[in-house]
Amino acid sequence: MTAQHELRLLPWAGPEGKPCYLDTDGREGFMSRLADHIEAEQLGMAAELLGQSVQILDNETEDLEKLRLVAAQLTGALRDVLRVATSRGQRLAAPE
Image 1: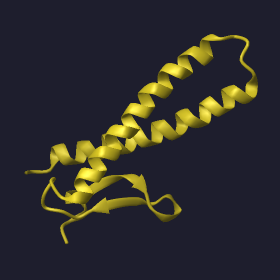
Image 2: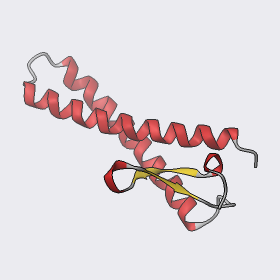
Image 3: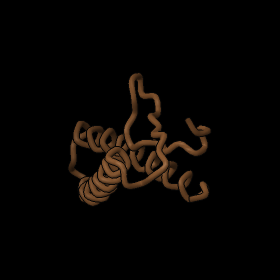
């Protein structure tokens, strides 16, 4: 097993919300490709949610329950995007 700074942070959490890491030498393996696909999906969903949120926040007549739902969804999307950014940043710093 490699040192933790060489492990890839995966775009999902494990049990109890703990981070999951992948120990691999290549980016072409099944788990690496799955992680790449999930990262792309998470970023796409976050972009869509941002667009919807702007519309909801611009509407002054939205009820409090809908605003809370949007805030909860944005929180989850931000958590995912931060995990993707952290993972990609760690891989940029690691030698090939």
